[in-house]
Amino acid sequence: MTGRPYAVPVPKGYRVGPWEVGEPVASGAFATVYEATLRTFDGEELPRRAALKFLPTGTRTPRQLHHLRDLAEREVQLLRRLRAPRLIRMYDTLTVDDPGHPELDGATVLVLERAEGSLDAVLARTPTPESGPTLLTQICEGLHQLHHAGWVHGDLKPANVLLMADGSARLADFNMAAELEGTHAYTPAFATPDYTPPELLWPEVDERGTRIRPSADVWAFGVLAHVVLTGAFPLPGGSSEARSDAAMRYARGRDELRLSPGLPDAWRDILRDCLAPTHAVRATDTAALLRRVEEAAGASPSSRLPRLRPRRWRRPTLAAALAAGILGAASLVYTAPWESAPAAAAPPTCEKPVVYENTDGRGYMAGHSGTWDFTIKRGDGGSQVRELQCLLRHLHGITGVGEVDGDFGPKTRSAVLIFQERAGLDADGIVGPATWRALRTQRL
Image (tube, rainbow, N blue to C red):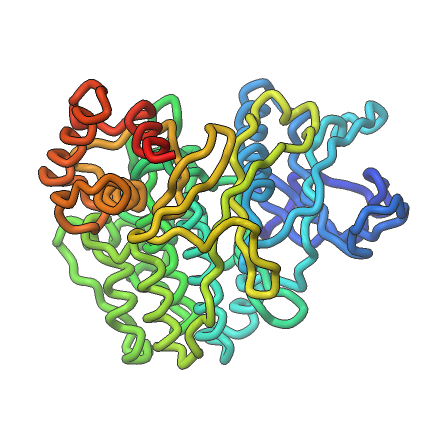
């Protein structure tokens, strides 16, 4: 986040809970971040230094408040439910209760891991930093962690990549993030044009927001990587508007993509795949993308990609401004290499589904979605479809599902019809909550 005036001006020395506000770190349209020092010790394991992100959720017009609370809820949901090595960590959420400062009263405060700076600031000093390839591998790893857990970032750009004291990168600013519902998610009608794929520059918006796919994050990563490696955007133009026009011409086949001559050869095919003109042909398998990025950067492959383990989770009580909008749900938590393994069995694979438990009950999983309440049908694609195919084949012995590739084609639909008839369900070929429940629980 950059720019002034501050979205939420907070005086130095102001106290919020156990924290004392210090100097401002960054500010954007929706929030301001301040450094903070812990002044009250109450036995909780909190760091001495943190970053406080203030969102003005109590001092705007009703329409603005609805929008700001939605942004706050999105970020809190993700950070409460997902902990991963390449995502910034959240320690707590607070609400300012201070009628004497009406400009602050009701503000939501996120207590975050303290970073030393942002990639945006690094690029302002050094357009093509020597550490760029290494940082790109870490950014791609963070993106893979998000997508693997079923989330889309929605606003990946250098300002939302934070750098820690050891120089490593963390993804941050998740107020545009959204959880996938099948192949799509819904985000607010807001974007950073230079990092927005052509199909979302003028999107259709309904009451739920803009429909977005994981491929939007992959496009943003392609733009970001080109900027880091060459110091320039991949599309021509002296302004965001001109580059957006160039993106639309490219998507419509009127212009070709002309990557910078300064782009290292090892990255050309990667960026062409990330910047494919339509989402349908864009590289969306972030696990495979990560391996390609590591190879191009000369980085050693990740010894073990973080894996998800489902568990029962009770959401802590949030601030009153957020409590009405956030519902309890199953949490997906990354087990990092240095953490002890969960008590459950080995992680699920396609060939070996395992039993897990969440708020919907006990069931089998053959991937990492663990979902029960969404609907997929012929023509859909993604990790949920792939898990469906794995459950049909390896849990229920229905082998004629086609390739286990995440594409819901006619063979997969035929396999679903067979299963639904066996399970005594309405045989419509659509996998909704009842079919998911039968798929996941039949052998228990």
